[in-house]
Image (tube, rainbow, N blue to C red; front, side, top):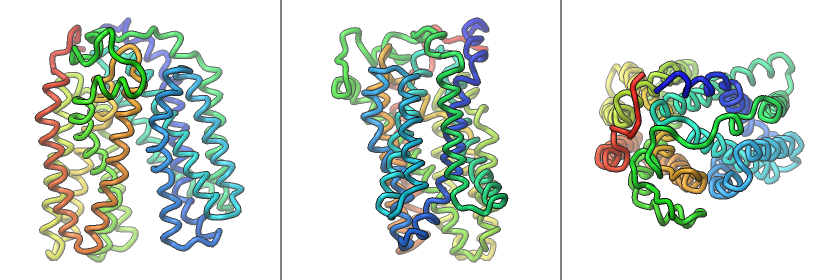
Length: 419
């Protein structure tokens, strides 16, 4: 890796990472308020949960259309379209007169967010040299983590200052306006950084993922690359699901063993802080030692943590075990920051990765959406059984990564160099 290859990315870092931070910050300030708004419109608790989950459903549904938009309009235009769509959804949230319309507005935000995320992922895939791709994408992961970490605090501050439950809604409107302005006015990374990934074989670092005459379009991309998509992508979907599971499961476990709300929040805060603190270390590890050194610690750590939890629910020091397991999960998550983005970029065909990435993100988001539902269903019967099932799922993910990542993403990438 040379400093000349890296300097445009450093110079344009505000244009590259700023929109992601702003978009995620505003969305994370808004989303905790959705159940409150739903209840205020007359929805019961179950319906409020469904309305809040419409964001994930919208994102899942939006990934495939997002590939079409990005492939035809380019990353910059796609991000502006996504910001406009999210803005309409946010205004809908503010003005929705019924729970049904509120759910539709939340769905629209998720749908637009899929295009926004895919556009930036596609840009990084085609323009970041393979030698430091993981570090660049770990910063995207860190940008999401920063927004998710700061968003609820922004919402809490605005609610305390204004006393209005709509303040976080309008904060997202402001963030979207700033996002669109930054994308439209700041130097365009898509234009200033030429397409093409130094250090990568045609079709991706694995060499042979794509051929010059590979079929185009979504169906063509899936047909041509179905093996790595299903095998590596399936393992990535498990990891995505486990990340969502821990956000739901750890608080449930804390309540079940008798912790109060402040103690549960502290446990989740410790886990989230460790996760956020290690996001750039993840990129360094992946670029220097290989992708498995990020993927395996995350899944193995989660497997150990959930399996240990399954046997500690009724122990006298159950709270201490929960804290220890939360720390292990936070370490694994932090050391795998950006791994899903990086694996998708590694496997995506060049020079038009959008359709493949759309399928990749759909598969990964499907795992993130369905795994917590399955584990929650088991938790309704027995929390230890649910913890054990999550641990077994993590073992399967680790086995998948260990088996398939070396086959499709060789550690020795053509043209890769050290730092």
